[in-house]
Structures are given as structure tokens and as C-alpha cells.
Image 1 (cartoon, rainbow over the protein chains, first blue to last red):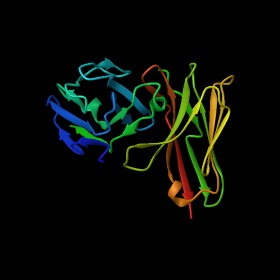
Image 2: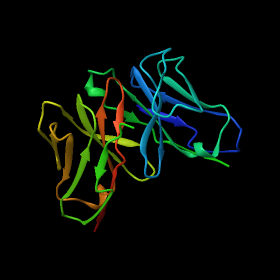
Image 3: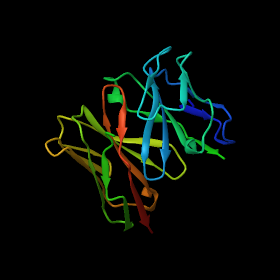
Image 4: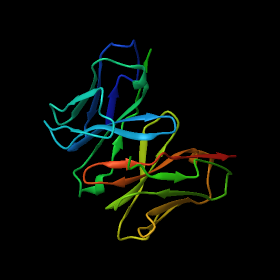
Length: 115
Length: 109
């Protein structure tokens, strides 16, 4: 049982390049989330999904897109990377609200540097 | 931003001492959770306290909740070097969590 798996673990991009971060969970969770973590800022929600085929904006969605084509996968895309997107990105998943109170299970993170 | 605030931002103690971290939040909650993050790792859920509960225990952890003051505290008793980590509170919204900025705890042997 792998839990939440993020790929890649590290990535360096040049300004303007694009990339996709993949999150996969094997717990049959309905909800999935993408966060970014910056020093002194805690975790901020980028986008989330409450089921296959659905997505919603979080606190800091600009510059990112997401897709949830399969229940177990949640993709985060950067269309044109900017230095301000240098961060550590975390994916998380959870059961529906009301089940376990929305306890979230996190991946190990992706460290992204944009030069 | 609806982020809560943890206090203190950093805490340094000796093994065997107790560590207390506080969390203030801004909106009404269904429940409040605490997570731990070891350096370079993802967050791990520690404990959840519901809005109608005032205190909850789990092993060496004790969490209190005061909804009238919109605050919670996490007490780690008899701390160990392995407790060194960042600790975050998170308030539950309709389908999302709002995390605070965290307290960095350093436990020295």
C-alpha cells in the first residue's frame, strides 16, 4: 500500500518552460489536493478535486491548471513557469467530508526550482 | 487569507520537557486537526478534535479546543529528540483544510 505518490521528486525548470506534476493515490479517496509550501507561509491550497472529473480553485490557483481524469490521479500543470513558482509542492488525498473528518494523507513532495 | 496562526513560531526544549504549541483560527470550524512534518517530508496527521469536544488525548499528545476564543493548543509530554519537527494546525472547511504557518519544534538530547 503506497499511499500517495508524487512524481517527480525534484525538478529544475527555466522560466517559460512547462511541466506536469503527477499525484497518484491507492486508497480509493474521493478528494485530492495540491498545495505549495514556501518558507514562513505554511501550506497554501492551489487546486483541489472532490471527485473524478471535477476540479476547483484554492487560495493560490493562478499560473496552474489541474486535471482529474481518473479517480486515483491528480495532475498539476505549470503552463509557463515563473521564478515565483519555485516551491515545494505537496499532493494530498482524503475520504469525503464526513468520513474521518477530512483527514488528509500527504505525498513526500516535489521540489521545484524555476531559474 | 483565512490562515490560522501558530504560536510560537519556533520552540527549543530539552528531552523530557513538555512542549506546548498554540493555534488561533479565524472562522467557525467543524473540527480542527494537528499535523506533523519532519524535515523534507510530507505532513502526517496526528489528531483531530471536533468542535463539540474540549480536550482529546492520544498517547503523549493532548489537544484542547476553545471555540469561544477560536484557539487550540497541542501539548507533547515527555518530549523526545524524535519529536523534532514542524507542527501545523488545520481547520476544516466544507471540503478543504486551511493550515496555519506552523511551529518548528527542536528537542535536544
